Length: 122
Image 1 (cartoon, rainbow, N blue to C red):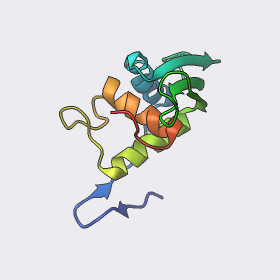
Image 2 (cartoon, rainbow, N blue to C red):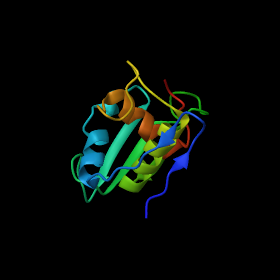
Image 3 (tube, rainbow, N blue to C red):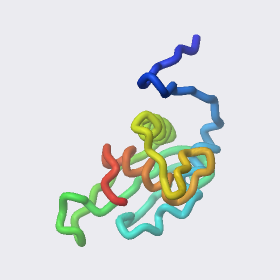
Image 4 (cartoon, rainbow, N blue to C red):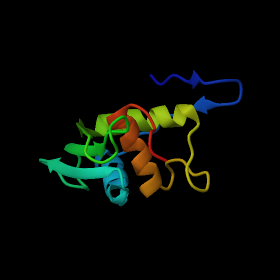
């Protein structure tokens, strides 16, 4: 059974079903890893287009900005939860797009939420 969650008087969250590999490749196939704050990505029993576990290393936003890192593992469930969080916050990128046409900007935001728990780098 699907239920509606009303966010406020003017918005409603609508859930859709998507293939896990499509969600995964929307994020990991976008070129997000070329941002200055990403240090390394290691795919564990997967690839950019097949979901699994990705070990991602970012510069630590609370560190010295050059040598302090945060490394964490990201799964497709983490990605879905991050997308949901960003959608609930009303987040949009670049020209106001959300996740209908994912790109580097949206993938980076998703991974920041999934790994860091917040949108730190802009």
